[in-house]
Length: 167
Image (cartoon, rainbow, N blue to C red; front, side, top):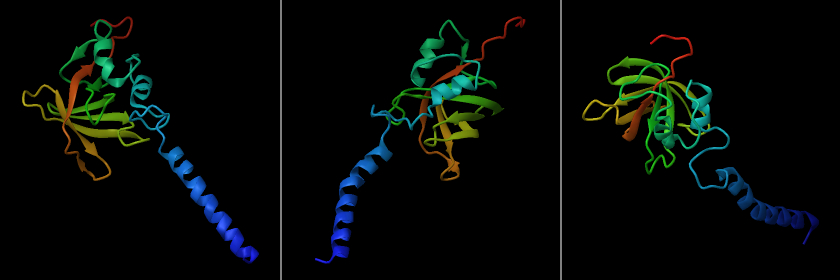
């Protein structure tokens, strides 16, 4: 076998041996099997970009807020929308309300809805039968349309009053 053929054979073998490891490294999610993408996660991002200083899984924020922050079934700018755990969102999700567009429409800023990205002014609509924001649909930017999936939510954690404010 000429030396050139031996090199190709060795390189091919190397590719066959290394490729599975490279693919596994690219697909890794921190080794936990959870549905987050690298360092960008919705809960720490929402904590940094709101006045809500909670920690833990996004879905746990609703219970954790009890007695610490006001909670409501209607949105206001600066509040945090808390998504329940579901098959699509095993850890839940949190989004920061940017603005209220109407009784059933808001714009949110959020991290990791689109894997590894921060999205701003994302439309979210209330599709709950009782108009109470317990079920929502979220804009899906890859298709440029409102997403078809209906996500269950707890409601909104409202911003804490600032010290010295009179309510």
